[in-house]
Length: 79
Ligand code: FES
Image 1 (cartoon, rainbow, N blue to C red):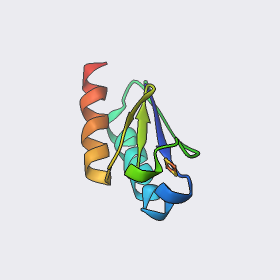
Image 2 (cartoon, rainbow, N blue to C red):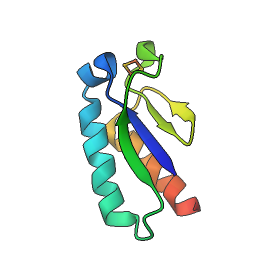
Image 3 (cartoon, protein in one colour):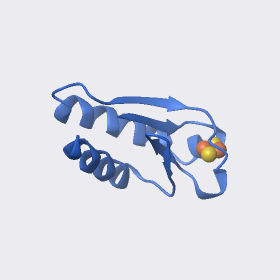
């Protein structure tokens, strides 16, 4: 599973770094099999509904660290 957190200018100004930090922390705790990759990425062209994350090419907007974490863990469980 590839998780990208937009760290572009608009999302970055809306604290996407906290989302990235939280997801990396969740990965360290729960991704025992090392089956996910979490990384920052540039603008995804969806700045009006910041901040956004992309999981396996599916974009989800209006994220916050808790929502992103829940979504990530839910998908991780299904793998
Ligand atoms: S800066 Fe995140 S979608 Fe544009």
